Amino acid sequence: MDFLELDAVTKEYPNRSGPPARVMDQVSLSVRQGEFMAVLGPSGCGKSTLLQMAAGLLPVSDGTVRIAGRRIIAPPPEAVYVFQQYTRSLLPWRNVRDNVGFAIEHRLGRRRAREVAEAQLDQVGLEGFGDHFPWQLSGGMQQRVAIARALAAEPAMLLMDEPFSAVDALTRLDLQALILEIWARRRLTVLLVTHDVDEAITLADRIAVLTRRPARMAEMVEVGLPRPRDAVATREAPQFLALRRRLLDRLLLRHDG
Amino acid sequence: MTAERLLRPLPGLCVLALILGGLEAAVDAGLIRRALLPPPSAIAPVLWDMLASGAVLPPLLATLRLVFAGFFIGSAIGVAAGLAMGWFPPVFRLLEPVVELLRPIPKAALVPALMLFLGIGETMKITSVALAVLFPVLVNTLQGVRGVDRVMLDAARTHGWGRAHTLLHLVLPAALPFILAGMRISLGLALVLAVLAEMLAGQGGLGFLILDMQRSFLVRQMYAWLVILAVLGLALNALFLLVERRALHWQPALRP
Image (cartoon, rainbow over all chains, first blue to last red; front, side, top):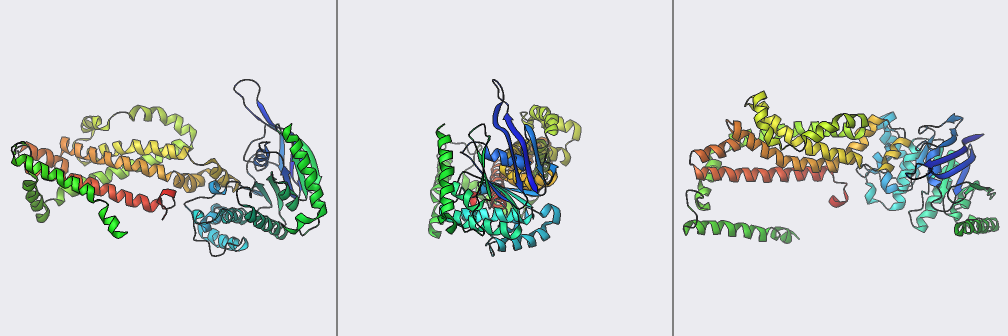
């Protein structure tokens, strides 16, 4: 069953001189319930725009977005967006516990939210850090806080916008392993935007490849690597390397136009 | 480390001592007439008497009460109006012309008009102070609300926060550095307006006394009250910085 459906989604921005600038042209894709899908494309192609429209944070110019069969015009309760810029999405005046409680306090109240937050912190490897402030933590730990916050809302779906692009390479592997584990344990549906080919292959069931601006669907790639995967070992599989080569060729070729 | 901290204000204090010594010498040498500016050594005993007898307290408390009442009323209205204007566009369109018209008026110029309406009692004085405080706080709050990071607002939206909850728990704390900066400017203005209102319609308070002493040719007393006013301004500012530091402990510039 399709959980998220994008049907001929188009995005245009008004242009002072001339016709509106089209950044996305008739993109259609559907993510099945429980599926991990990556969206891959050259930087600046509008991947984040796509994700924001899927999250109901940005209106579409044309086409429709559906989550669990309902047309999305505002952020739906089933899907939570995880931002690339954790330094800007966490509240600097709140400690880690209250930053995670952010997800649910408006529904459960502050006290109950803190209890839930504490439990979530354990699950992302941050037990004992509840009293710390975001700026006291490393980038990787801050992104763990952001992930714990998203999970606290108990969403059916995560929409992740290059969530690991701002951390160092080792931390990235760590966080990729964490997200693989959480996805499997919670049976989440994930749509993850990235420009990192290795990341897309390691994590995803299918990869939606976009063209350069205005973004169109170039290809839908079935990854087919066995599960459970490992953020390190999976990258040595011949199947991984072949797919990596194919995707990089495609992206680099397009890149030079 | 501690010694360094103790020594840091020393050069500044030396300049202050030099100025006081210079004044003393200038008066002694007949360069300045005693009737206009008594030497610091003549003002100090008067000041000491006022402090020791407790005579300083009633006027000081009267002025302080005026400053605090006006400051809190003006700040509360300024923050509320700034948040409403920044967060709800129709409110902005409604109030912006009025604010832009009233803002540039030096609030001191409104005191005579306020006296017509409110008489010369506390109500008029508190209103004068509150008016002076209101606008810098309002404008800074508005700026703070508009500067809230879009990513942070999107985070609230994706987690299903409503407009009111977002305003109270995200926009307000995010704008707090701006709000407090506005309040710090306003605190100085509050003191100015309090002193002025007391001069124009005073039965007590520091402003009234400074003018009253000058008119009674009690020049030493006048300067003594002036010193007390200066110390009051200094103390209020220090107190505010303390509060600001506690409230904004998470800001990069204030981290330990």
